[in-house]
Amino acid sequence: MNKTVLGVLAVLGVALAAGGGFWFGQQRSDAPGGSAAAAQGGVGTSGKGSGGSNGPASPSGGVTIEAAKVAFMPLPQGITAVGSLRSDESVTLRPEVAGRISAIAFQEGQRVAKGALLVRLDAAVPEAEVQQARANLKLARTKFDRAVDLTKSNFMSGQAKDEAENNLKVAEAGLQLAEAKLAKMELRAPFSGMIGLRVVSVGDYVKEGADLVNLESIDVLKVDFRVPEIYLKQVQVGQLLAVTLDAIPGKTFDGRVFALNPLFDAAGRSIVIRAIVRNTDTSLRPGMFARVRLFTREAKDAMVVPETALVPTGDEQFVYRVVDGKALRTKVEIGQRREGIVEVLQGLDPADTIVTAGHLKIRDGTAVKIAGAGGRNGVAAGAAAKIEAAPDKAAAPVSPPRS
Image (tube, rainbow, N blue to C red):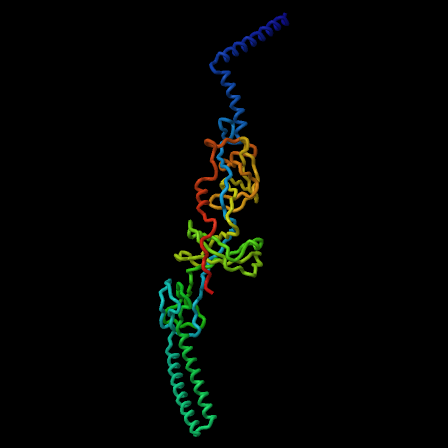
C-alpha cells in the first residue's frame, strides 16, 4: 500500500514540474523583444572581439588612416655636419714692453680702421731717450764732417777719420733704437675690424705680453667643420655650402670651401674642412654653433615622403604601404632630411601610397581605409613649397679671406 502511494506521488511531482516549465517558457516568449535582444547581444560580443585590438573600424571594416603618395622633388646631394664660426682675422693685443697705460683711444664693441691708435703707454722715458739719441747723432755728424775736412788738408790721419765715421753710424743706430722703443709705447690696429672688451684701464701697469683687448675681423667669417673620412673623394676646394644657425632661425647663409686640412683628425677619423661665409650685416659672430650642408653633387629628382611616415625600429626605418586595402610593413633606406621631408633611397616604388598618420592603430596586414576622398595626394603642400623654395645650389662665390 505504501509503495503504491509513493509511486503515485512521484508521478504527480514529475507532471507538475513539466507543466511549470512549459508555462514559464511561454511567459518569456511572450515578453516583447526578448529573443531579438539575445540575438543582438551575441553579435555585439563577436564584433568587439574582432575589432578591439586594431582600433575603431570603418563602416567597411578597415581602420581609418591618413596616407600620401610617394613624390619626386629636386634635392641637392650633400653632407650634413656641424661646426663653429671663426673670425677671418683675430688677434689679442699685447704690449711688447712693460709700462703704465696713459690713454685708451677706442670704444668697446666699435669698428676701428687699420693703423688706428688703440692704447698708449707712458712714453716719458723713451721720448727722452730719443732726444738724447738725436743729440748724439748731431754731435757725431759734426765730428765726422770736421774729420773729412781735416783729412783733405792732411791735418788728420785716415784712422781718425774712420773712427769719426764709425761713431756717426753708432749714433744713427742709437737714434733708430730709441725711436723703435718709443713706437712700442703705442698699440695700433693691425687690421680693420671690431674691437672687443678691454680688461685694463687707464693707469694700469702692464707687463710684456699681458692681454689688453681682442680685435676681430668679421665681414667674412670662417666655418670649421668635420666630415667622416669616407667622404674624402666627395670633398674638394670650391664646393658650395649652406650654413644655418640655431640662434638665427629661418635664415640660410651661403659659403664656399677654401681649404682642407691635409692632417686628418686621428681621434675621430675625420676630415677638417674650412669654408668662408659672407657676413655683410654682421649678424654672424665668431664662436657661434653652425649647421653645415655641404653640396657634393648637383640637385637631382629624389623620391621623398613625409617624415611622419617613418616608423623607426632600433637602427632601422620602416613605413606602411597601402596595398589592396591593407597596410604592409616595409623596410626602407633613407637619405637626407629636409623641412619635414625625408629622401627614400630603397624600399619603395614610385606608385606606392604610404601611411602618414594612424600607425598606432595598425599592424602588418591590417585592413585600412584612407581618410577623406582618397587621402592626401602626395607630400604636404607646405613642405613641398619649402623644398621648391630651397636653392639647388648655393649663391654666388664668396671672396677668399685675406692672406
